[in-house]
Image (cartoon, rainbow, N blue to C red; front, side, top):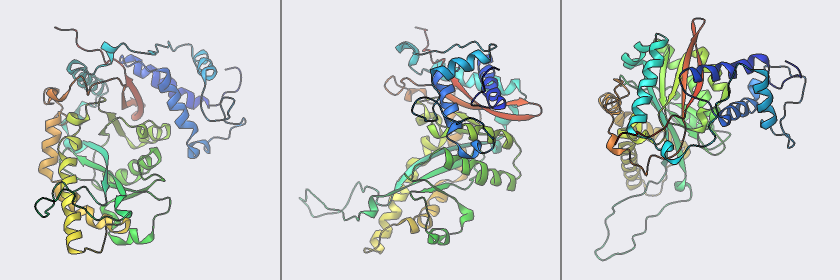
Length: 389
């Protein structure tokens, strides 16, 4: 292979298999996708420690772990079996997500699963899940309050802490099941009384500096809490986790580990989650409303107290479980066309030209090799609008 490479042969083979597998299904991979995969690999210290590298693991003059054009060209030269079909830009009429594109997405998913004898997953509600994150404020905005007639400005007292919010990653099964949600705290160190406030068996705890989800937090949740929940409930694998497109999903170590756990992460087409993702379509809205009511009742009964990081879980979880009823979950999986898997179930009237703009459709799928499912990332850039008049 000539000069010693930064990535091991096994690591480069993962990238090669990914490209070949994607191209076979007419899902060309862009140069940027390859770069992102390698960057995520180089940013994962746990993965780096698995390999004893003789050379400094750096790219470029800045010394950052970021591949450059030279690495990219050498990577292709080391693997002549790969024909680079990189689409640098798409014309405006090819970037708009249309009904035809979404229906093609349904067809691609069905065809792929059928090809690998995994089509039965779509027929088993207990093997389909939807994850998505949303923020919940300690002091939700109140739309209506009572005041004296003629009042123009009605103050609503809040503390600085009440301006904070907690990110929650929700997880629902198409059969109405409710795996533990992930509550993400904006601290690198979580106070012990947070753990003591409520049984941790009801939810998973994550932490990040910003309080938002990132690939490390998602990795810990899917490969620990969710994986354990699947095992405890004797769920047949592989399972599919349907998700929106988020940078936390595009991470090498996550993809590699999900392969062993037989968890297939498939991303919904961009700009379509408002009518194709169950959590967005009918669950997060009512949950936000119920959470606001819960906080208002708490403030009315305890005027000198506020919602805090320590009290959030104990207050939020009853709201979460009440809104996430089995009937509602099943209803919105069906309405989105995810389970049953039906391209005609989605409400395409919500797909407007203003909402459907440029973007790739990244799909984490599973590739059956040697009796096990390997997770890869696929990029669907075939977003050409229908030419039918």
